[in-house]
Image (cartoon, rainbow, N blue to C red; front, side, top):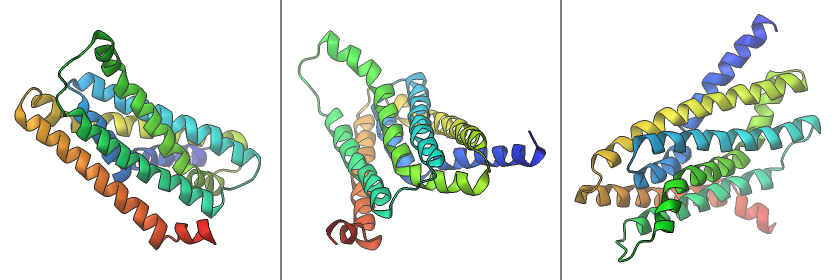
Length: 218
């Protein structure tokens, strides 16, 4: 393995860390952190997000690299639009989670414990779909063989896992420290509202400014 390619991999690792803290990723994981009362669970939520994101990029990215194909603009923007819908849904879910319920059951508590990780994996999976087109273009312009492409995507994925692990741990602190207090509910509401507003803006920008609606109905 040449020194040049090692430099490329290191650069991909740094890009992965940077990619993890893009606004839509941060807001999405923040809604999960707002529902967590435990730093360890929040940290694992970040790890699961990174795993889901990397899995999607690797599977779909490698399929397109091997086939020497790319995603159409319409499909790429539509997958990005799906991220906006997901952000709105996550925001609504976060607001709903702070509504007090009169009854609780053991099964609900069990689901509550596993939910952050499963939700994070799903969110990472969707984000990975939305980023597949850019990942393929970046990989094709950076490496020369299929195995190098596979390694590059995996190293990039390691960067996203570490980046999101660090961020999810940090962002969970205000929610964990205020657990059981009135301000905790307010923080949850803020996280949910931000997610909804950003999701709506994200879809508007894609549909109007990026021309997705015109592509759909042309």
